[in-house]
Length: 97
Image (cartoon, rainbow, N blue to C red; front, top):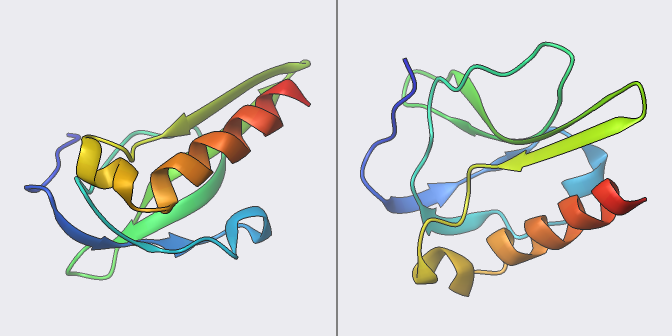
């Protein structure tokens, strides 16, 4: 079941070269146990206290149709950090390419 702990400082980890240069500290809700298609390409994850990686952003392409998702950016404080707005810019560029 998907859940998230309270909003708090969050460290995310890139698992794709396309986001390896992003600032990875933010304050946000760490969505956990999201069901993600195995065909999706995870971009960012967060590790729970047990060390399990949970995807926070991914892309997927199938038959020329593209989809992108970010679980980040729940409030003004999350968007005040560079991570959420830059991730949205990159996902938008990827969708429109």
